[in-house]
Every structure is written in C-alpha cells, then in structure tokens.
Image (cartoon, rainbow, N blue to C red; front, side, top):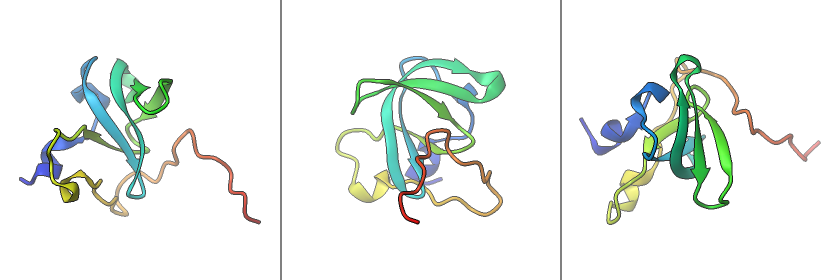
Length: 101
C-alpha cells in the first residue's frame, strides 16, 4: 500500500472532528482544513478552510479527500489520485459557472 492510499478517505465516517484534510478535484487542491462536523449518513462533512478561514461543506462523493500531508512529505506524495470512470461523476456543490461561452 503506497502513501497516497493510506491518506485517501473514502467516506466521512472515517473522519473525526479535528482531523486535517485536503479536498481535491481534477488533480487540483480546492480546500484544506480541519474537520468541524460530520454527517456520516449523508457522507458530508464540514471543515474550517485554512486558506480562507471560512466553514466549507464537503461532499466526500464529489471530491477526492486525503488526510493532510505531514510536514516534510515529498511533493510527489501530495498529489491527489486521479478518478477512474467507475467513480462517482458528481460535480462539487461549489462548482462556479464557466465564464467562457
């Protein structure tokens, strides 16, 4: 089992208040912060985003959730795993509309 696999969270039921997590979409980091509340029945949880200081609702089915990397972890180990076609095609709840068009 590689480092990424041990960090990967598949359900909000694996989380506890106070856990440090990262939320990724299409290989990009969207949110990083501390878990403040979980709703395992709906597979949702909230974090306090460390970059913005705001509370964020995170959908574990729409994003790749990783436990935050320990300081000193090599850069290559901090990339989110790519989604496979068999994984959920849900779009994140915070998806902004495209400005092109």
